[in-house]
Length: 300
Image (cartoon, rainbow, N blue to C red; front, side):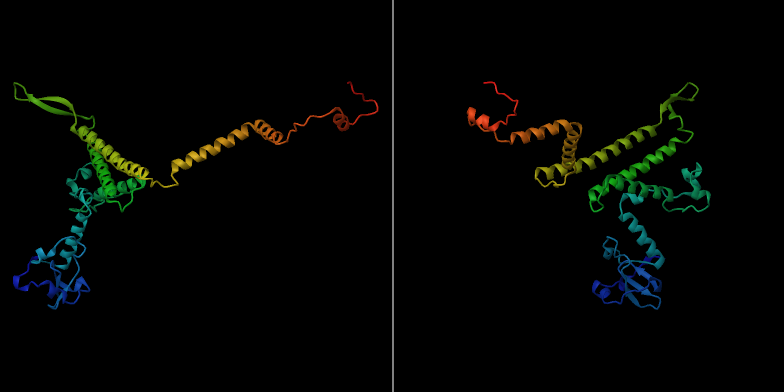
């Protein structure tokens, strides 16, 4: 079990760096937060068990764990490192859980409930909602601001799901509750029908959801406008491409619907290209240009 390391057994950073590296945690008798491991044979080694955890373990150099305890602490800290979303799923309480009491937990019904661990149902729902929002809004996982928006949307979805489950219960099924507003002369409470407070919570969550979506979309719109102002907008802008395509379609439609007009236009253009002389012709020039038959006459 975990215990406090005596002062005389604590090593400096330089001493720890000179120790051999622990290859297998199962060979250790004790895992210390300082980075020192005590082997089964009593020898010391250095480990990187908590290297991925963002904490200054020099402040906890007096704490020592068994290998199993060290694994659980590492996993527990890693979960909280991912943010509030990881801590949101309820802790399984077995038969005391409202889902189990309502017959809505198949895991409990099968006898496999993960007691005192995160609820598998809510953990799975949270993950699915997060992935759905990632796909719907095309969020870049390397953009921490938008990732936070997506995480909050998934958290709101889970809270709304909980409220809807509560509203399905018999005490809230008609969306009304008996609210005591006083006591009568016989000492009995005076009850008044009121809308369940769960509806207010539902409205607030839906309002927050809308604000988060608007904030995320508005942030993107602001960036786009900034790029447009700096003339950094992509040349292959979809709106511009769509406008060009619309012009092309209109031109094709005119040619298909007005083939005669188009033909006349081309004929007129050809006629206009024929040169017209302005030279005055004499009667002799006219006679030379006209071929008369034996019965043809010219009226002068």
